[in-house]
Length: 121
Image 1 (cartoon, rainbow, N blue to C red):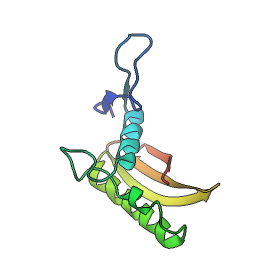
Image 2 (tube, rainbow, N blue to C red; image 1 turned 90 degrees about the horizontal axis):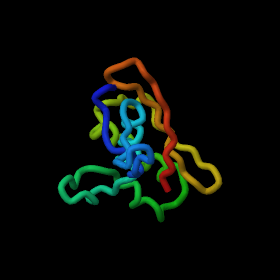
Image 3 (spheres, rainbow, N blue to C red; image 1 turned 120 degrees about the horizontal axis):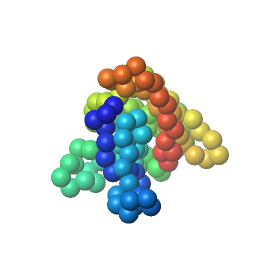
Image 4 (cartoon, rainbow, N blue to C red; image 1 turned 60 degrees about the vertical axis):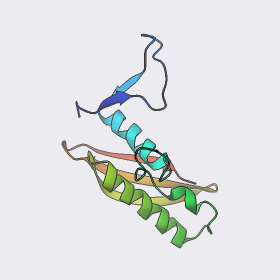
């Protein structure tokens, strides 16, 4: 995980140094997963294939079919773009009108497992 290092997400200034705040290791991978899942497919001019189509399902019915499409699109984006992790489980939960992706994964280079919750729609 030592090679996973970059600007923190969300972007901010480090109050101690006055420079850009950095993250590394497992936190950087979590940040990158959030960026991937929050980016609309086609949004990045130089990388049109990066992101998901999750936002296109916002006005679809709140049913199991839509939930399965959301889960599948998010899972496929992670498999394609984030090679530092292996998804072990992707499931959805509905709570208080919010749909959340619960993503379980292991790091591909170390036996470290993690789980994150990402609000989708």
